[in-house]
Image (cartoon, rainbow, N blue to C red; front, top):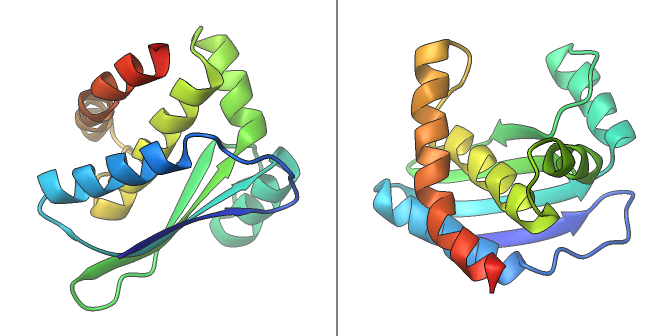
Length: 143
C-alpha cells in the first residue's frame, strides 16, 4: 500500500501530503476497497492540458485526471492534478488552497474507486461523498 506524491514541471511541495495519505487510507477503508499504489502527480496547466488532449481528446484545462491501472483486487492508479486549476478553484469558491487541494485529491480517489460524475445523479452522489470525506479535514486545516 503506497501513496506517492510526485511533481511534474513544478517545484512546490504540498505541505499536507501526510494528511492526504491518512485521508486516502480512510476512504479506502470506509469504502471497503483494497489499496495497491497511488501516485498523485502535481503539475501545471500546460502539462495537464497536454495529458487531457493526448489521452482523453479534451482541449481544455481541468483540475484532476484519474487513470485507473488496477490489477487483480488492489486498486492502482495515477491522479494528476493541476495546481494552477486548484488555485483558480480556491479563489472561485472562496476556499484555501489546502482545502481545495484536498477536495481535488478526494475527487480523484473517488474516481479511482469507481465513482463517476458524467451524469447529474452520479455527480450529486460524488459531491456528497467529497463533502463527507472533506468535512473532518476542514477542521484540521482551520487550526
